[in-house]
Image (cartoon, rainbow, N blue to C red; front, side):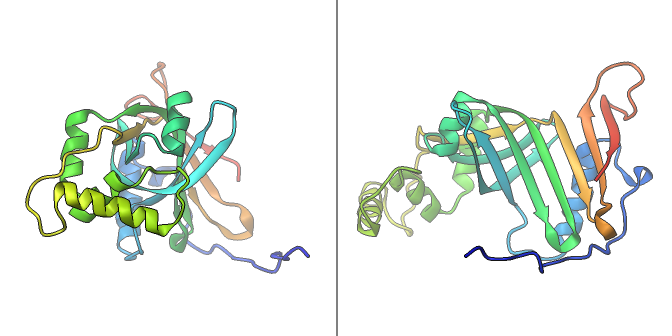
Length: 224
C-alpha cells in the first residue's frame, strides 16, 4: 500500500525576495545567503546535492560537500573513478542544489564542469584529516565490495603503507582523486512564500549590450 504524504504541509512565512534586494552578481547574492545560513548553525553548511547525467542519459544525484565558490564556479572533491566521476567524464555538465530549508530557501546552479587544477587539488588534499586521506586510498568508490571486512582490510593495508593516524609522513594524493568545478551558466535563488507564490530570481551570463545586471549577468524573475 502506498504511503500517503498529502497531509504534510508547510506554510512558508519568511520575508520575500525583491529585485532591489539582489546582489549585483550571483556570488555576491550567494555569499549574503550563505552567511545567513551559516548563522543558523546547521549540521553541515557545505552540504549540497550534485546531479549528473550518464552517457546513456540516466540522471543521478547525491549529497556532496562544496569546498569553494566564486564567480568561476562551485568546487567539490571526489574519487574521479566514482559513479559521478564516470558521469562527468562522459557528460561534463552538472547541477548543484543547496537546500537551506530552515530559511525556506534553495539555490540552484547549472553549468559546465572542468577539473580543478592539480596544485589546488594538492593543497586541499593536504588540508584533509589523515583518516579521510586513508579512506580515499582504501575505497574504490561506487564499486561493489563483499562486506565491511573487505573495507577494513583495505584500510589496514593503507595504514601499513603510509602509517596510521599518529604518523607524520605525508600521504600523497591518489591519482584517481581530485576536484571538479561546476561553472555558472545559470543560478537561481528561491525564497518560499505563502500560498506557493514563491519568489524566484535567475541570473544568467549575458555579455550582450543592455543586459539588466552589471558585469555580464542578466537577472529576471521567474513564475513560481
